[in-house]
Image (tube, rainbow, N blue to C red; front, side, top):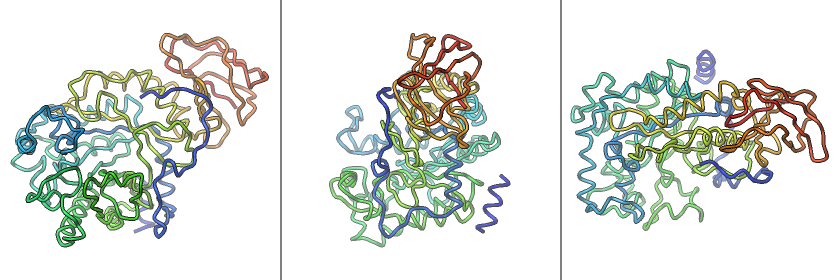
Length: 476
């Protein structure tokens, strides 16, 4: 906190474990750059990005009206062919959905328990979905009455009626970094989805270029809501701007033009102005303008774990712990082993891991997700030195191995991913490394003897326990 105050003053699923991973061209991960807009060159923001990279593990809570129906977030409002509404007439569905604010109660919402579950899981930062595309605000907005605090919503009688405030305060009290997901698209706002026309897809349903006054009203609305989130909720650390199809013309190319839908309207909400507004009170705020690129995508969010390493990029792999990011009635979660392996693979390739959790309609987290988090946290209590505040090192990932290094480069961590039903072998083959290890040990106890061989090293190990999700050998 002192550091952040000083800054302000100065500024007024499991992936296949295959062959050796190479360093990829960063252009494959990062979208085109506006030639007139330089990459982020603010030294304070760049330092803050490096601090964010140290955290390695975050959690995303995706919760809203949609949790009452256990559907994939607000996507069922979108009239695109892939969306399944169970055969219900589209207009009837939309009218019923939009009334869900009158039944949203969050009777068992307990953000302090969420924070405890996250801390038990070794999580270091939290992103909360303050507003998804449906436009329902889980914060106290004065720009609309479609909020969890409005008297039309039963949640307004809850002691934690301002849900976003309750979440960030609970997590901040336990020293987490905090942030908001905020959709640039708003399917409830009449200046985004104009009620006088059909909505054939997720995009704005009129041409902003032909009605600039209306579009400017919408941009002002978005800017005002960003102001509320960044001025009224203390010093949040991150702002994730969702709805990647809402983007400036310079960022549109053959790889993303299909996002603009059947009409192809460019939707520029003036993110540079949003960023200035957001950083008026939080000058070191990290902003991720999802998949747009440029100065205001301080870190990149991906939904598929890259098969190659991006050691110099700031990126985050987002995956759900359960069946979906939002609450699903399928009581199915990734196993703790899958979470450990995915975390190791992600970090060894240069990224952070963001785990999606979907509370149910009452605000409770699925039991299977809580249990998986606890198992992940137990592994990190022993092996966290190989994860937190590390950087990737060649050969990154190879066969069953993931490699990380302390930032001072004095220690190299070799993480051996143990398959289901496999006991930790007594002899492990290690490829050539940038260092020649003079001594080695196993985190959590056990002994290891390192012997050079023709292809690298042979590790003769006696781990403290024969069964584990992954074993870490630290070498100096």
